[in-house]
Amino acid sequence: MTKNGLDREEKAFPRTEIAAVTAANEKRPVISAMVVVEGWSDTQRLALAVQCDTIETGGSALGERVLERISLAQKRRGVIVLTDPDFNGNRLRQLILAAVPGVTLASISRDQGRAAKDNPHKSLGIEHAPIADLQSVLLKADQQAQGKRQESDIDLAFLLDYGLLGAGQAKEKRRLLGDRLSIGYANGKQLLARLQALGFQKHDVLNALKGGPDGQNN
Image 1 (cartoon, rainbow, N blue to C red):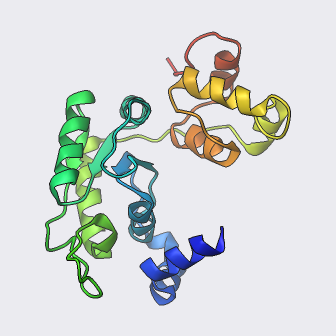
Image 2 (image 1 turned 60 degrees about the vertical axis):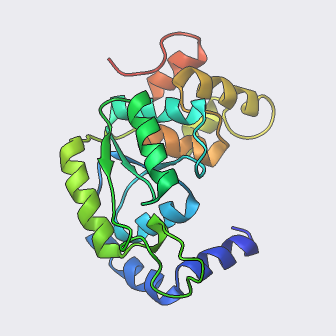
């Protein structure tokens, strides 16, 4: 991570809080459904509360590629939408619900989403919500979503063996795979995370690379 990345993380989440939660990682509840949030800071905040995978919309933007990933996640393991308690957050929830029927909507109150201190602009966001509140909201939503995560047999060695990492045609292969599996383009690390998060298997990837089925399990 870059120095700027470290600075940003440390500013948003004090070392004392990160250390305390890290020490109790095994106690964090596991959320089976994929969680849709607006940005990186939200993902980091959720990581302190639960064990989950996220899709980030990139703020108030909502592109076609992101909707495709949300739709695929809904089919494979269920989706919880948890956006900020403001106008843009509500707009995103409604757009996602219209495009991907069946997703589970979760929310926090404006009071829960308001930073307790150092907040001169009165900003609202998931990144400010108390850990206990996020756990409660997501556990309830996960029960409603009835998400099921399938374990993947894909690892880094497999991606290397089939030319998806490293030099040569790796970048183009990842782009092709992302299109055929509807997971979007990703670098090597992101690709592994997405394939594992969605429960894809080695044969799914091989079929997609050969131009066969879209890789979804029957």
